[in-house]
Image (tube, rainbow over all chains, first blue to last red; front, side, top):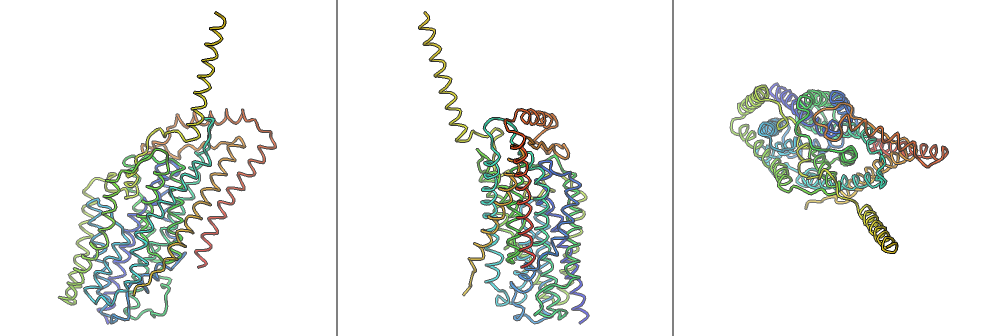
Length: 419
Length: 109
C-alpha cells in the first residue's frame, strides 16, 4: 500500500506538471491575437489569461468525467495495477510534448495526454480496458471535426463583421471598435481554455484516486482539492508562459485586423465552451488554429497556403499515435521490470524535465520556439495588403466610369457644336 | 458495435455557430450604430510594438481626425443621432447578454 501511495503522489505531481506545461504552452492561444492587434498590453493580457484560466477550471467538470469515467474501462483493470499505467501514460504525454516543443513541431498537449494513456493501457492492461467508442466519439472525432467547425464559424463571423460595418463612402467605418471587443473575446477564450484543458488533468488524477480506492468510482466529480490544484497549476503555467511571449513580441505574428481577431476569438470560445458542455475533450490549440485560418479566409482576396496547412495537419495527426507509442514503451518498462520499471520511468521523466529546462535556458527565445501554432496558423492564409473591391464597389466603380465617359462624350459633342 | 452520437456533434456545431453569430452580429451592429450616431470609435492600440502592423501612431491620429470630420458632416438630426446611440448601446447589451446566457447554460448543465 505504501508503494501505491508513493505512485499516486508521483502521478499527481506529474499530472500537475503536465497541467503547468499545458498552460505555459497555450497562453498564446488566447492572447496572440489581442496582442497582435494592440487590443491589450502584453502584461495585462498574460495576467488576464492566467486569472480566467483559474476561473474557467471551476466552471464545468464534463471533460474531467470523460477522462475519468469514459475512455478507460476501470472494471477491466485491477485497482493497484492501473496506477503504473497512468504513470506511464503521463510519461508518454510529457515526453512527446517536450520533444515537439523542442523541435518546434506542431502538436496538441491534450492529444498527447490521450495518446499516452491509450498506449500505456494497451500494453500494460489489454485492448478491452479501452472504451474505443468513447475514444472515437469524445476524442478522435471531435479532434477532426472541431478545428474545421471553428474555421467555418470564424469564416462566417468575419464575413458578417465586415459586411455589417462596410461603408462605400470612404468615411470611418468604426472597425477600430473591434479592438475593445477583443478584450472580452480573448478573455472568453482564456476562460474556455480553463473549462477544457484544466479538466483533463483533473480527470487523470481522479482516475488515479479511483484506482487506489481513495475515491469511489460512483462519484463522477473530482474532489475540490483536485480542482483547486489543477486550476492553480494551469493558471501558474499560463502566467509563466506569457513572459516568453512578451519577450518575443514583435516577431512572427501575422497581420491580424481587429475585426478578424474578434471573429476568430469568438469562434474559438464558442466552439470550446459548447464542446466542454458536452464533455468533448478538444485540443484548444487546434480549435484556435482553425479559427485563425477561417477568419483569415474571411478577408477578401485571401488564399490558402496549402503546404503550411499540410505541415500543421501532419503534426496534429501524428500526435496521438506518437504519444501512444511513447506511453506504450513506458508501460512496457513497467511490465518487464515491475517496480524497477516505475523507477526507470520516474528517472526518465526527471531527465526529460531537466533536459528541457537546461535546453530552454541555453536556446535563445525567439518567435520560432515561443509562439504557439496558432500564430503559425496565420501564415497558412495569404491576405493581400489591399483587398480587392466588393461586388457592390465594383458596380459603383463601373457606374462612375460610365458616368465619366458619358460626361466626356457630352463635353466633346458640345465642343464640336460650338465649332 | 461502437455507437456515435452524431446529434451531439450537430448540437455543438449549431450552438457554437449561433452563439458566435449572435455575439459578432450584435457587436458589429452596435459599432455601425455608433458610427451613425457620429461617434465612430477610433481605438489606438494599447501599446505600439513591432508586432502591430495594423496601425501606426501616425495612422491612429489621422483616423481620429477623419472620424471627427465625418461626425461634423453628418446629415442626421440630433434626435436621429441620439436614437442611433441608443440602438448602439442596446446592441452591445444584447451582445453581452448572449455571452452571459451561453456561460449560464454551460455552468447549469
